[in-house]
Image (cartoon, rainbow, N blue to C red):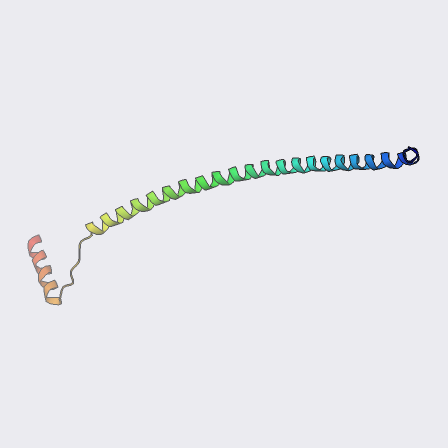
Length: 105
């Protein structure tokens, strides 16, 4: 009992120290949790923005592919419609020209 009477201040101080230490650790962890939650929310917003951008790019890509396919088809049609020009020798060219002139007269 004499030990408790002499050192009760030290015992209360040690117990108070441990209680304070636990309280400080708990307070710091709450701050950390709040910071982490805040970071998570900001990251979610950023990911939503990035996902929207990705969707827009995909839509644009589909539109571009359709336009490319349409122009390719148009080019193929134009190539089919082009007359094939045969190279003629000098005599064949003069004969063809004479024949055209005869038909027009």
